[in-house]
Image (cartoon, rainbow, N blue to C red):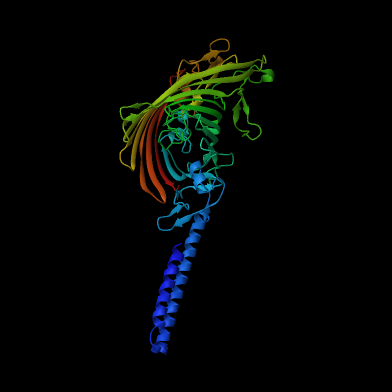
Length: 551
């Protein structure tokens, strides 16, 4: 339109100039005046050519960004205005303010991609982490809280430092409205913390992508119902608000294993949530089961000298054959409620949940199949102590057989002398403060712990060291825990940790966001008492991070 208007103005000016020239006396026909006319016409042709080139480049720029025509956004109302779902709509791209508008003037976001009625939002970041530990864990950015080395561990007497880019992340959200009441979405998120048998840091650091989340959702707005299927954060994970996916509240630390006391999982499952005016929420899910067992002896006595109990086995088709998988027979069941009342001038988030699990095994001597229940409950609260400035959060989880849901990954069960599994009792606590000091500076501090109590142990016959089984058996020999290279039961009773740090946004603008941060943590590990004493260990860790969010 700009090109056509400018051309019309130039044409009118040209005609006026020519008319004025023609109306002059016959002397205008001399050679000098003819030269001026020819020069003016040449100048007009040059200007028209420049405008034509500029208009073509503007259109090419629009084509590169949204290929001249873009698809309608996911909003049903917007789609109706600009041409209907699935149809192409012409768009005007402004190279001055980098905006894209529909023919009716509606602003279309250039931060998203529009395809066949879907809105596609890319996300993620590029990251470089620096990792220092005063006790070597031979671990990447995700710390092994339950494996902080005791004195017997040779590597634990050495420091550890490494760089890692594997926590970098890529995500994509695709969403669209079937109609004004039904909203569909799919979300996928990867990092590079997968470690196949061939992956190593010796040369090319060829670690493979790892699924963090991969799920689809369906929201029925008129009914207040929200469904999810696929791999996501477990329903029991603390939410910042509501009970919707992508609103979870993990600690702000750099460590990929977060802080002891934080309970979570990312696993396949199916869930449904009902909201009541977006203030009160009820949800339920069934999620993928797995069982972890305490380290320790496994009783023999099965056929041909096999172990007395079978509760796990090496992975089969499309699993890693070097990794054992537990033999569960039903999923984990989780129910949750959340409420968001307004107290004074601030909105508080409250939630509570319960979980039921089942641990499945076979007694190889009798052939009997055993089912042992695991269960627990907990909840959390998030309170803006000073709105938009200081936030407080607290969460707690207690039960039996809940260990794998904690960041310290303490065991779910112990194996007894008769081959039976017993669910370990455990508590998890986490408290945190987040200080939004300025629009670019955030500071945080967390304190958490995970503890397994009332140890379950037994003996095969007389109570002797050779006959000791289970969790926290007082006849386990711990004398080697205090000697370099010695043998140790390696069982954990308590993990306590304090972590503090900051994030700073160096740059935020049309080219994304550049962010840097640092986390310091101090963690203590205590074992169960046994012959020789109670093993203890501690570690200090310092992690730094540089992140670029281009999206």
